[in-house]
Length: 560
Ligand code: DCP
Image (tube, rainbow, N blue to C red; front, side, top):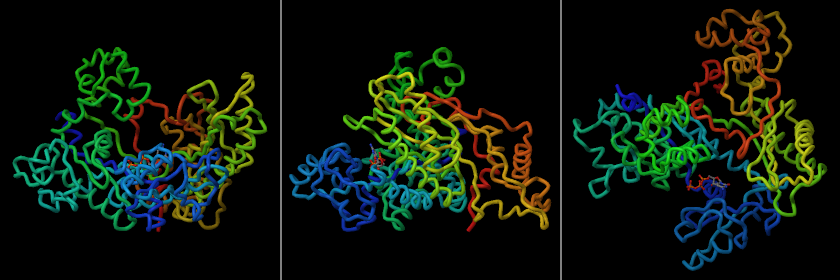
C-alpha cells in the first residue's frame, strides 16, 4: 500500500469561523446582522477610548481606527482588514450604505478579547460533538472525523449520502460547468476512487456540524475536508463564507503543485524561505521533484522525508484532542513616544499585564482545573526586527509574583544594553499541569481509602523548555501533581477498575512522585527566540508528535 493510500483511511477537517470578531459583535447585537460592519482595534494614541464589553459606546460609526475584522457585507464594497475607519466608511457610502463600526472591548488599558474567547469555546464545543477536536487558534480547529465517517458509511451500506446544503459544497478538481460537487456525489459505484467514499461521508458529517453551529449559535463557518491536516487547512479558505471544500486524492497534484512553497503550513516562515533559496525552487511541484538525496543534503534525513511527503500531499500528523489553548498570554505594544525606557515604566505595565494574566488564569483554573508552570516574557525593542524571550518558573499565578519575576528577567536583559527602549512586551503562561479544584476530576473517582488521610501535596512537576514535546517524565510529573495521594492510600479496587493503560500511567505518576527515575529536567529555562512566542518550528518533531496518553485524556475528560 502506498503512503497516499495509507492516509486515505483518515478524514480530517479544518474549520474556520467567518469574519469571526465581526460575527461575535453581530451575535451580541442582532440589529447589526446583514450590515457592513468592521471591528476597530483599540489604539490608546488614536481617537479610541476604554470600554467594557457591554458598554453601548463601543458602537462608534465615526471612528477612524484601523479594522481588524470585516464582515462579508462590508467586503463587497472593498473594505479590507487594516483599512482605517474613514476610508472604509467612504467606500460603503459610495454604495449608499452606512458602515457600522464597533471597537474591541478594553481592560487594563488594552484590548480585552474575553468575549471572543468565550464564543470561540462555545463553537468548539459544538464542533467537537462527533470527533476529536484540536483548537488551532481562536477561530479555527481541526477535527478527525474518520470514525464518524466510517460509521455513516456503514449505516448507508457503503453509498455516501449527499450532505446538507449541497449547493455550498465544493469538490476540488470538479468543474462547476460539469455538475460540480453534485455530479461527484452522483457518480456510479465503480467510479469512486480510493478513500473517496469515506471522504464523502466525512464531508456530510462536517456539513451537519457546521449547520448545528449556525442554527444554535448563529455563526457561519468554512471548512476543508481532506485526508490530512495540511490539505484540509489549504482548502478551507478556498470558498468563503459558509462553504466547504473536499479534496479527493486525485485532485491533490493539480491543487498543490502550482502553489508557492510558502503556502504550505510550516513552510510560510524563515525555514520555507531558506529552503526555496537553497534548492533554487519556487513551487510545491518543484519541491516534489527534488531527489530525496538532494533534500537530505539540504535539511537532514528526517526533515527530507517529511518535506518529500508534504510536497506530494502526504501528512500523517495526528489531530490531538485539545480544546484549550496551550498557553495563556497577554501583551501590549509601546510605539513612538510610549516606548518604555525606565524600569519604573516597565514595572507599571508588568503589573497591569500581571493583573490580566492573574484574572484569566483564575478563570481558566476554575473552568479547566489546570495551572501553568512556565512564565515567558516576550520583549520587542527598538532597532531589532525580531523579539526576544526569557522564561522562568511560574511560581504563583498572582499579579504580584508574576510581575516581580518578569521584572527580574527584564533587569537581567537591560543590564548590558545602555539606551534600551522597549516597543512591545508580553507575558505568556504555559506548561499546564492538572490542578484539581475537587469538582470533576479523577480525584473524585480515586478516593483515598476510608480511614487514611490524604498525603501532602506532591512536589511540582519538572519544567520543560517552551515548545518542547511532552516527554515521559513530564507527563508523569503532571499526573503526580494531579493526584494528591500516595500509592498506598488508593483503594486497590478503584485502581483495578481503571482501563489498563490508565493504570500503567498512574503507576508512572506514582514513581515520579516518589522521586523515581522518571523525575528530572531543567528547573528553569532561558530561551532567546525571534518572533512569536512558542512559535519555534521543529518540523521533524512536529511530524512525529505523539498523541496524548490515556491518563492525560482521562484527566482532561470532564464529568457532567
Ligand atoms: N484578528 C486580529 N488581528 C489580525 C488578524 C485577525 O485581531 N491582524 C482577529 C480578528 C478576526 C480573528 O482574529 O476576526 C480571526 O482572524 P481571521 O484571519 O480568521 O479572519 P476573519 O475570521 O476575520 O475572516 P475570514 O472569514 O477571512 O477568516
